[in-house]
Image 1 (cartoon, one colour):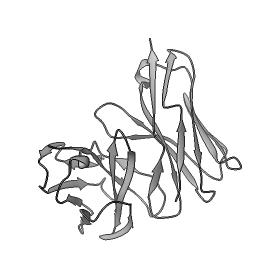
Image 2: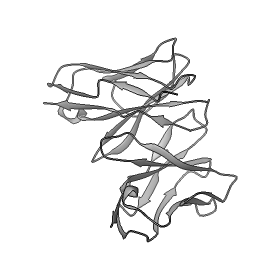
Image 3: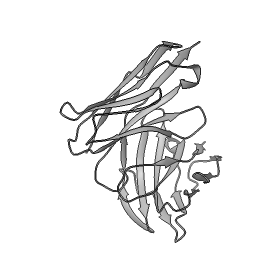
Image 4: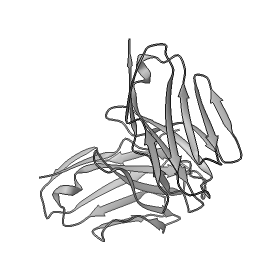
Length: 113
Length: 112
């Protein structure tokens, strides 16, 4: 069974630009979560989607948004990029509702110059 | 909201020794506690987990213990090997979708 796939793996943007990251969950998983990982703040929850609906949202500004498609694939978007948005963005999928069992992808490393 | 503290932040052991990483959580309603291993350049990998109705769980060289009264849980790795070197994260889960709150991580170094 294929794991969680994230694209692109690496990208470089400049301040003020916007970026879209993509995530394909494990087949059959309907829940997709996004986390931001930085050396200073660790792993922080961004949002979770289940059946195309945002179920939970972390404490991030409105520049961070996401969506989920009918095939459970998900995208997250960050608009008006800031230097502090440089991070590893991790997507995780889960087989069930509310079990907490997450399977992570390799991440998309975003560098903002 | 939930808060998870993890100690130590770095841990260096000799190959063959045991390693213990400890976490405390703040919300007594937390009911699921996974541990993740993250190797350089990779995403976190679930290595073991425990639910609140269980006190201890073991899988080969790794084990996790949970003390609900004290609100802390620990990861134990026995007979450490160089390939155990990685960053380990603990996490806790409340009944709110699949959202996890993570500890700050422990960098484990196993010296051959």
